[in-house]
Length: 396
Image (cartoon, rainbow, N blue to C red):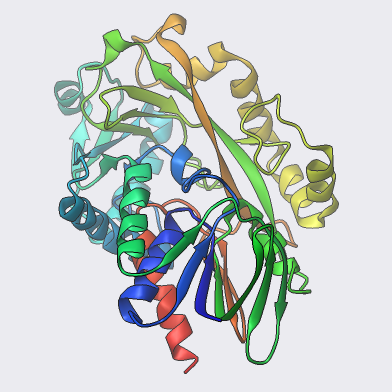
């Protein structure tokens, strides 16, 4: 019998396992993951940004967790000798139509207590000669890291403290009883007093395994990236972001100087036709039909049909994708973009078609499910983990 089992070997699951064993060093704790390697999905396929907390409503979990997570991530990297950089972020209004949106972001950044600097056109050009825009906001606390390396450090901390990690262990069934939770897996049957599920793209399916009807569904959005040619390694020195569409939970195609010295372009956001559909070649008809059977996803797709078509066009046309970047970085050309691995984001959608914008949890007497962990989940993993363990402790 285990005291705690965590399902999911992404950064949130790993951070939660670490927090559990830190608070309960004498408990028997295990982490299970269906893949052969940890951080195989969202953690290992994101843009690597250490977010500052620019966009999020003041007082929301996303705002609070991101601010705390920025500092906590950097501290963890310092302890483990993990390379990271803090180049800062520039939010760029490419033309006058985006100035009002930039001013709204300026207010939001101030409300969230972040350091900020307004850059007029000439100041922007001086700061980043290859970037064009009518104005920009500089946010100096944004950074870049390899979250796979962060995940490996968390795994090492967990196992060195006595925790067990089992990979290649797919969960096939869950049963909750008065005194325990039973996990039926490809690696046998597990018994635990408490279960925490950080299943990302499979979050709703793990809730359903308990015999519950989740009031949301996970809609997978693929984020496609390009990598700039090596000759552009010094194109920009900051993270360069456009002014996002406020109706969508995605931040737009941006330029990211990565920790390995390369620069990536992206991501877009296109509906994936499989839960783990990392390319157009990966189509799972059963996944797609189950997704579209949920009325909330059909409503959401209809509500956002115009931006959805635009994102689809950017996915199918490299030239259109480039045009999105050239709005603020006009020197780039088509042959500057080379293929780079895509990611798939787990986005919870409610029954009435709303894109869940904050963290979402489902509790039962002996389980806690992280049902929506949107960006900045990687940045916020450590405070999210503390919140999860606080919720468990509050049960008494």
